Length: 84
Image (tube, rainbow, N blue to C red; front, side, top):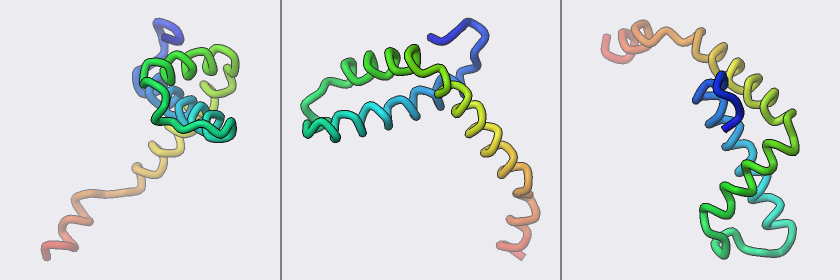
């Protein structure tokens, strides 16, 4: 979608962000999301990503923040505490 070098995680995140923005635009126009087919919303998302390349930067930042947050979680220690 974006480029052949864009990771699937970034593509998924940028589409998630775009989908939320498209839904906000639909609601702001007074229409209901259920009146639109999923394909129409996806087309609008893709157009929005092309029009607003800063969404890609936001997606990369979100993924970096999530990765950073999960680095601090030690699953084995947490499990030991739960089942000790």
